[in-house]
Structures are given as structure tokens and as C-alpha cells.
Picture 1 (cartoon, rainbow, N blue to C red):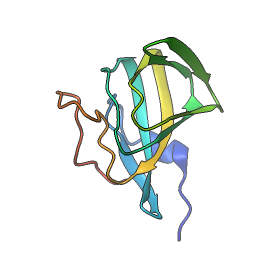
Picture 2 (tube, rainbow, N blue to C red; picture 1 turned 90 degrees about the horizontal axis):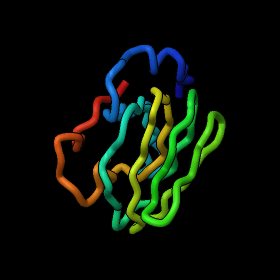
Picture 3 (tube, rainbow, N blue to C red; picture 1 turned 90 degrees about the vertical axis):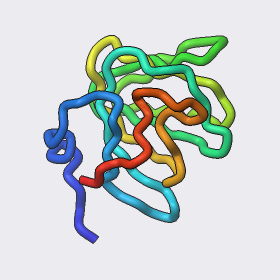
Picture 4 (cartoon, rainbow, N blue to C red; picture 1 turned 60 degrees about the horizontal axis):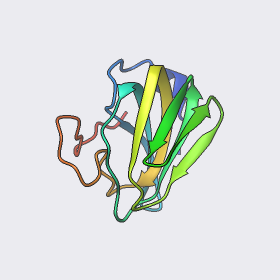
Length: 119
């Protein structure tokens, strides 16, 4: 029941596309991540994902459009929707998603992180 200082937690890591768990509630996990570059196309058949931008901005690519998500904005990617995050500059985000969510969804890739660190 302690508070979490997001800035302090973000200072604990510098790598990209490797979410860290900073909280759990009702079967959901709160994760922090830093993004830079282009991720892979993927989807989550059973989970929705919420991406909240803490610092910077990124683009969420869908097959039919691109959405710019800026600091203090969030985007929800519905289950089953193919998407690809792109960050031309480093961005810090918070994710809210079910604990069962694997970052690369239906794809097994070098960027797959299925055993996340807790901070």
C-alpha cells in the first residue's frame, strides 16, 4: 500500500521495448517502458492494451491509419487489432493490461518478453 514514484522507477532502466511491472490490481498489471524505434506488427486476441505517454510521443500504427500519441495522452488498442508502435525519439510510457498479456502478442520474436521484472 505504498505509493510509487514513476520518475524514480523510470530511472532504474534504460533499455527499450522491455516493460517492467510497477503495480498489480484486479488481474491487471501497471507497467513502465521506454520505447525507441519501430516495434513489430502484432495483435492480442484476448487482451485490450492501454498506452499512456508520460514523456515524449509516439505513433501507433494500424494497417489503415497512424495515430500520434503525445505526452499526457493515452490510446487503447482493442483486442484483436493488429498494431505497431513507432517512436522516432525515446518515449516513456505506462501500460495497463491484463497480467496474461505478452508484449509481442501472437508473435514470438527476439523482442518477446514473457517474464517481466518487477520494480
